[in-house]
Image 1 (cartoon, one colour):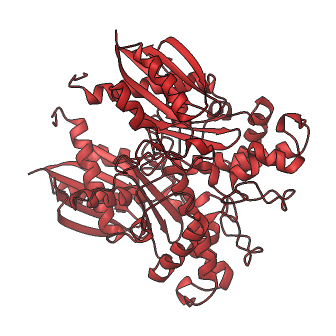
Image 2: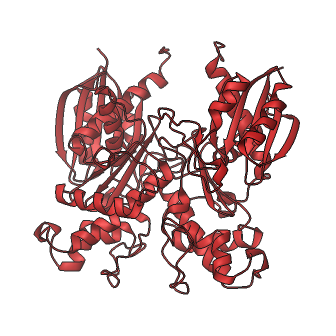
Image 3: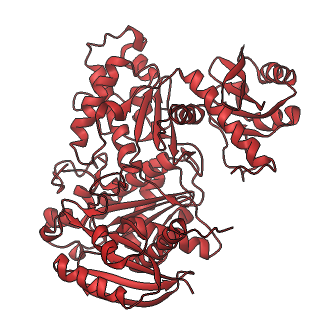
Length: 299
Length: 299
């Protein structure tokens, strides 16, 4: 049986998992994210117990260097987590684990997990955009079954939406750009606007319509640029009520300019938790890495 | 020798060409675009002279039905050219020419022509966004050497840019959306603003900075969503002076948030006329169609 590994570095923890060639999860463990030495030590010791794992998929918070022609390929770059800046994640893991390892962002692995889930369910969604909105805004895009992004992963959080008529003065919280999408709709924007967490803001407050207006614009842009089969909206900010608001704004803004099919099939919530999807994605990317690295020919 | 065909339907004419498997053009002719019966008659009679053409690439102005599962696949849909609405372009050509025929938009074939040109020059640009701004705004996107768009071709003209501080009142000319990108920067927008053609407006007029600001936003969005290797800006509106203005605005807006490499290699003019690129694209797409339709296996 082909054994594959998944490692996902998240805000507060790292999840290691082992699965089979059908991406069925066999074992799973979580370690807290502390300093790189301790955390990577835990990860490496975990996988050293599985000496028949043939390839591993790694995903991480960013910013990551994904360009495989860069001398810093596989690094976490200038991270907001001080100890995690300029860390050679991929190089360290390769040095100790000695198997082929794929490397991508947390949102890319999640998006790829959605794609694989659809394939396993016999309803393949070959072209999808996955947008997640929590502490930041991330995106992963699958086109014809492959993640896109030649120079890095999609950065849809840094588009500039048109400001809502009732929201003209808030400057936004993005340290780089101010009122880009992320600066207007992610968790810190709620804290800056209200001095408290988004969780404490009733869904009847008008801010949720304003936020839906901005998120809908990102879905419009993704629609018009990519013409995908499906857009998946995840993350803590996009709860069930908010998703409905986004759908309404999306239809109003698109004004039927292009046909996207039934809206409830087009703008959807994730099919599973992002943790689960990310493991599925990483195991699948590991499998690809294994076959592209080996001499085995698949029909 | 493998012979391939290209047919491109444009505003005022249709170009037919025959080329070889290396996309070298062997013969070429242009017919005026009149009514469908006359125009398609000319096209069909031209290709009937080449009974060894093995496949043809067709590209056309839109809107086109590109979804091959639609009953109207291959049609020109609700065109602004009245006689050309609801015309079964692909079906008619297939009926008379009896070879495999690929079908895509005029901008897609041009974008694909840029990709093929880069491959033939031994500097493959595997991931590119081609945006053209003339009477309308069109886009074609190549990712990993394939055109993207599951539900149709990219419609970047219909994104909403953030309005320029000195351009708050103009309502835009898009009949669907008003002040979308196309409604703000395409030729009709100049006519609506000034009562004359864009050609009569000096490049020292501030409108060109305003237009550059809007076009730069579309390049930003394409950059952040696709992370391509290159963005090509073509069409009558983007002359040499305007391209420099767009580059400046692009750099200001992006504020180094992501690395795109040297700006002069990233935001570029087309490598050839759009007519030439489109023929190269169509011949290449015809070649793909030929090999995917035949039993020949390519190593």
